[in-house]
Length: 105
Image 1 (cartoon, rainbow, N blue to C red):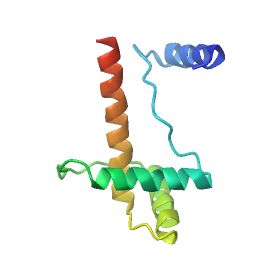
Image 2 (cartoon, rainbow, N blue to C red):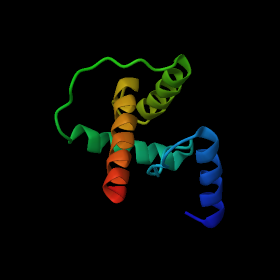
Image 3 (cartoon, rainbow, N blue to C red):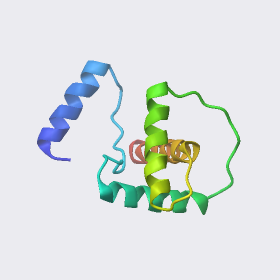
Image 4 (tube, rainbow, N blue to C red):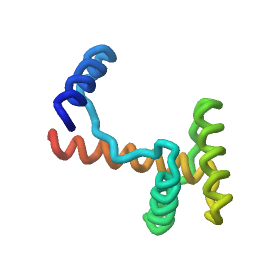
C-alpha cells in the first residue's frame, strides 16, 4: 500500500473508530477482466469444502448488485446465482480477516 493510500486508510479508520484495518484481496470493480476473475473465484469456490446451509439477510441494493453480476456471468455461460456470489464474497472476507489476524496475532 502506498503512503498516500496508507494515510487515507488511517484517516478512514480513525473516522470510523476502527481498531484495525483489514486489507482485502482484489474485489470486482465492474470491468470485463473482473468478470473473468469472478468466474475463476466461482470455480474455486465450487471445488472447496462443504458448505453450511444458513440464512443471511442483505440489503436490497446489495442483492440487486449480486443479481446483476450473476446475470452478466450467466450471459457468458457461467452457471451462477446471486447466492453463490454472496457466499463467495463472504468467504473472501472471512479469509482476509483470518489472514489479518494471523499477521497481527
